[in-house]
Amino acid sequence: MHSVQLLFMELDRSHLELLGALAKHHTLAEASKAINLSASAASRRLHDAERRLGLPLAELDGRTLRLTSAGKLLADTAVSVTNQIAEAELAARWLSSGADAPIRVGVGFFDRVAWLLPTGDALSCEIVRSPSSRAEDVLDPRRVDLVVDVGASHDGITLLLDRLVLAVSPTHPLAAKTIITAADLASHRYFASDSNPLPGFEFDRFFVPGRHLPEVIMRIESFSAAIDFIARGDGVSIQPRQSIVNLASDEVTAIELDATIPVEWYVKPSKETAAASEAIQQIQATTHEF
Image 1: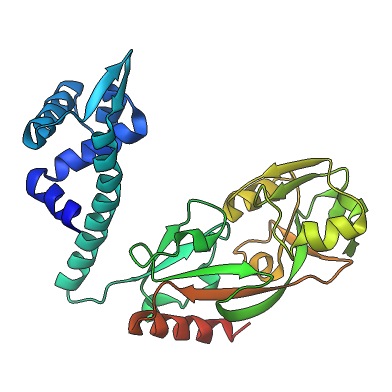
Image 2 (image 1 turned 60 degrees about the vertical axis):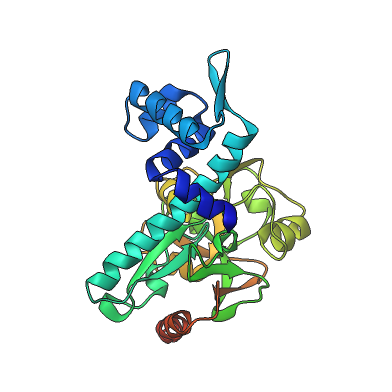
């Protein structure tokens, strides 16, 4: 806490913003562009930060501007602090309007979750995307109040029991089948949500026992993007049945697998709070309809 307090006493938010951009882009030109600043103004801001602290924060290495060890320490803190400030400012605006702050729902690969959430004003929420395909990678009370995801096993609160099916376009050659085997998919492009197969899902419970793998496997870490590709006939993917049958259009259809693979939709709070508990109860009430 002491280092953060010192940072605020010496530098203002504009300095933190620049240091965070420099850590990401490594050149003054690119960093200044990222924060909508001219290169000359960014240079003056960097020199001002160094003057205030009395130590160098960056040095030229050829054409690359490298942060010093002190500069990197401050830049790492700057990214965290500026994110927290942005979150606090947003919450403050909600409070000043007299409304409750929205519940922040973290999602991973499954970025189409509107069907799981209450409609209208029943639950005011924001959707926060995880940096990976796993929603729990964003499970931090500073970023989200809860996450919603699908798991073969989990330590969250079960919302809905489901099973895996094949998602295909109605015009795809496999769409005429009523049951799909692993051998059926061997010659088709397959969309996977993660480069590392998850225990209890299709690679573990369908492809390996079926002794066949798709010849072409492409990683797509977004359910929305995967559905777009599947809808135009570019490939297929095994997904939870409810995620397919609750799509707003009929561009994708679900076909049963020859193996039953149960999965569960679940919710997990980042911290036990009254707001998170109330939101979970409202989400549970919605999923009881399925």
